[in-house]
Amino acid sequence: MASKLRRAVTFLPLKDLRYTQTAQQGHTWFMSSMYDKQDQEGEVQYQHFPSKSSNGRLLCINGSDTHDGAWNSYALAWPESLPHNATLVKGLTFVSYNHYNYDNIWHGLSAMVPFVSWHVRHGCALPSRWILYHWGELRTKMSPWLRTLTEATFGGPLYIEGFDHDNHVGGGGGPVCFEEAVVMRHNEGGMSRERRVEVYDVMRCKARAYCNVSLEGRDAEVSNRGLPVIGMTMFMRTGARSFRNESAVVGIFERECGKVEGCRLMVAYSNNLTFCEQVKLMSLTDILISPHGAQLTNMFFMDRNSSVMEFFPKGWLKLAGVGQFVYHWIASWSGMRHQGAWRDPNGDHCPYLEDDRRCMSIYKSGMIGYNETFFAEWARNVLNEVKMRKMEEASRKSTSTDASNGCACS
Image 1: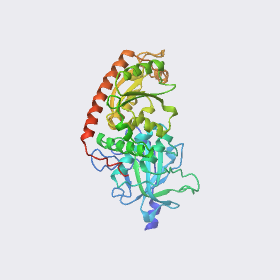
Image 2: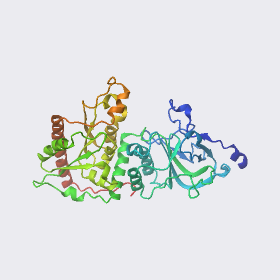
Image 3: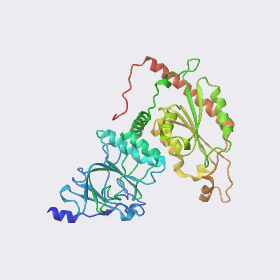
Image 4: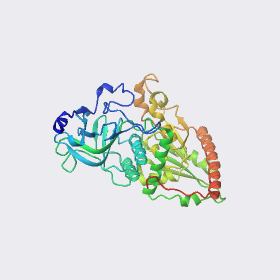
């Protein structure tokens, strides 16, 4: 019987083109024959092997192609009747599907979040390996920022499976079956805001611990008049979506910051800071001022209820689609306050109609101007809000006896 079951194992394509445009509720075109599990409403959607829903079967993958996901496949098999030439791998395996990629820190982070949620809610189980797929194609790298965050969150070196040589499982070319596997196909999709806030709290705490960032000194730091220090950070870019007149923009926020006792302005560039330098900078930031771009993903390293302002070049509102709102979303999901976005009405000329998609190729690399009146008024309003909030927080801390419980799973 075991021999018959072994021969009966049928591999299906990881990339099922039937559902690329019309994925049915509960599953996607990636591993399309399987439906996701959700422990309760607002929880992460996932697949777990072996489980009751898989009838005790293990997940097997024959999927090392990095160029065409149609060549990669998966199957389910009972432990006693694995496919011929299959390798059984011990431990827990995380299988990630990402519609975008793992090089962009926002896209990669969105794929990582549900695994952190599952990890926290399932006894802090640690994966032995990660398998990364993009459009059904195997990926073996992620951005250094994302890799470091993952190692900090899970407390150890990150092993990404490649199936590509003798030191990796499946080096002989046959399928690989996993003693235990968790598959995520929806990134953060379907998770409640409460669950996301919980996950971002964990990652913030873990990243600060990993980078030896302590806020004890800052919590005690006050201005000459005894007021809490307010960290205002301008997180700058070079090239596309940088400020056209950077010194003028810095001058506006510098003047407004100088009018508030305890305000400290910091100007930094996202492209020349290490992961831990970014974590430390954000931990000292109450107000983040930055152009639209992946560097804004760092906002969740700030304390909850910190403030964010975002800047866009000409043309983004009409042509950039919903992707332009991702940092508004992550602010909400991580407990921050997205307190405004300024969209430059001026910029490079497009020879087509203003709503022509071809204009986006011109606007997407544009630079950003400034509006001194708008910027100054925004800075004054937010500085006043943050000042009042920090004074209230300082008052509560002075009478509170609560102690920190540290990071989850620490």
